Amino acid sequence: MEGEYLNGKKNGKRKKYFSDIIRFEGEYLKGERNGKGKEYDDNGKLIFESEFINGNKNGKAKEYNKGKLIFEGEYLNGKVKEYDFNGNLEYEGEYLNGKKMEKKRIF
Image (tube, rainbow, N blue to C red):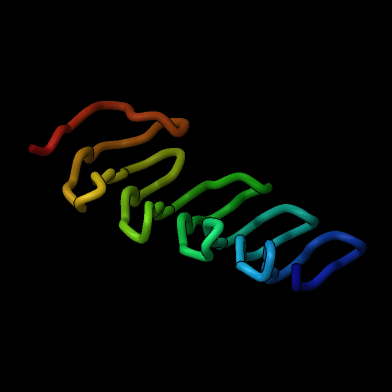
């Protein structure tokens, strides 16, 4: 792990590694993920980028599977788009508390 501490807690921009492979890079405040952050898989490929509040994913986000975009939008509350592995739009609608509100299927 590399980054700053304040009063013994993670603070500011940080990077977390596992076996020399980056797993997370982003901002911390008082020991919790706060602000923009990116998560990576075991091979160092980007799998998630979002805003974090008090350690939880929140706000605008993008999620990837094997390098392909599968989700973009507001992670908990707001407009979202979900894609299949081929990049085809499968769902466009809204999330409320992290769950789909209404289905608008695209074929």
